[in-house]
Amino acid sequence: MTTPPTPDTYRALRVIQDGDEKRAELQTLPLSELPEGEVLIAVSHSSLNYKDGLAVTGKGILRQWPMTPGIDLAGTVLDDASGTYAPGTAVILTGWGIGERQDGGYATLARARAEWLVRQPAGTDAAWAMSVGTAGFTAMLAVMALEDAGVRPGHGEVLVTGAAGGVGSTAIALLSAAGFTVTASTGRPEEEAYLRELGASGIIGREEVPALKRPLEKERWAGVVDTVGGETLAGAYASTRTHGALAVCGIAGGTGLNTTVFPMILRGVSLLGIDSVTCPRPRREAAWQRLARDLPASRLADVTQTRGLSEVPALAPQILAGQVRGRTVIDVN
Ligand code: NDP
Image 1 (cartoon, rainbow, N blue to C red):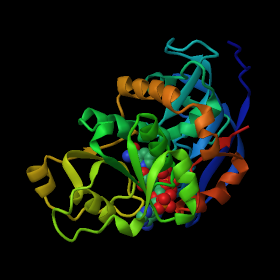
Image 2: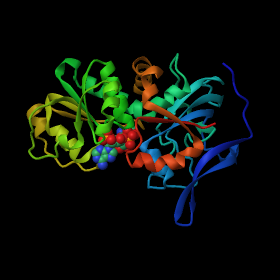
Image 3: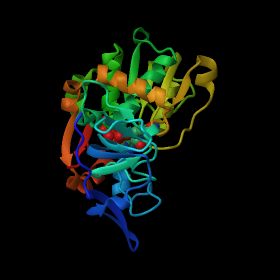
């Protein structure tokens, strides 16, 4: 393990408040600007998620300014006052409020609590970890939740909504690796070849996951990974097969849920909540180990683009507009 020297300053993309306006700018800062935490990390890569799009464009998820967004980071430990990690250890940090309530990964240095970190799985690197990022980690938690609820590959089609997005794309790859038959729901029919390459065997339009018309629709889905919410989730829930389950991840299409209890009490259907931010550590480590096995870098290559820190302000509105395909790794150096 080689430990890079600790620099005197670091570079960060900061969201600052300027009168009524919020804007992002690159700044060079002294180490005294870093938040509290036992572990000092030399960040090499971060990633771009929907939440980062909100933070960078000043849309609501930040409560204080200035703030360094970036809900994911990967890098090397420079110093750990808790004694948990030797200098030079490669670590991953996703969630726990970084990039929201505490400075996150859009910087060359970060400070964090030791208990939040996960060791980089053997045989992987920081670019791979950020290609997975919160989106891939969330997709893994969703697949594990479906499996824990008893959904098995032989049971029938598993629906993935918001399929061409970060969570959706990685969910397709993970489900396919686990032997499930995957149907992808997308508003971008031009992405069909991409979705099939990831492992989807069926492609349907957004409008084909119907908004709720009846409490119980014809049974179709053995399981669902939903990143869209709203009417899409209500429609998928009404069409889920007896003893099937839905892993509820996202709100890309809405936060409401207008439905009834009938799928639960007449079909034994389960709604499973997925929260990647506060996921407990043993589950976190198990998910990252399985991601290293099922989603190797070669599988992610076509899903991933790598961009620089200075490009993030231009990319942020694009992810909010649903124009970013798959995953975007941010090389912060
Ligand atoms: P992306 O923007 O990459 O993907 C979202 C996808 O949803 C889009 O690509 C699009 O897919 C679809 N979509 C977008 N707008 C609409 C709309 N109005 N109606 C229907 N579908 C729409 O985001 P992520 O994959 O990173 O995140 C997806 C969701 O999951 C977000 O809401 C995010 O906040 C949430 N999330 C939750 C986490 C958790 O811990 N629970 C962790 C990470 C993310 P297509 O073009 O294929 O239709």
